[in-house]
Length: 128
Image (tube, rainbow, N blue to C red; front, top):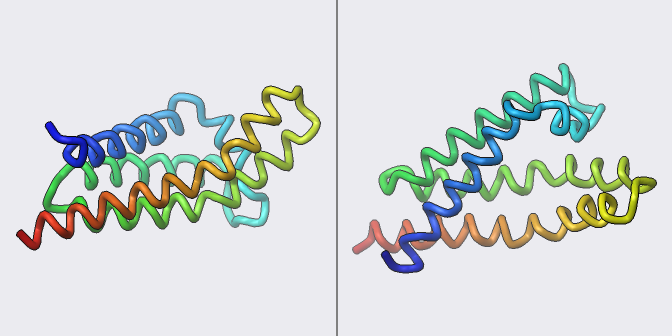
């Protein structure tokens, strides 16, 4: 299996783990939901968990990979405000927790680029 074949499956795995975590430990995700969003934080936690699980399935399947990868890139951009909220909320926590919260912010960029790369590779595979 080549590196380009593993990349979509690794992205799918990451999305599946993140989606499952929304149901396994929902309170940590509830706390990240910006208060300006309508509805309950738990509803947003569940909805984003379902979205990540669905995107994981979509990225894993070659037929839906391109669309799901592009949607994953959009999701990574969309959750950025939650990561900003977490960094702000954790600004007075111990240094290790503060560093983890701040470290999530620049991590979104490679995630978006990764998902776009998977979409681009899927598009190229479809053209062949």
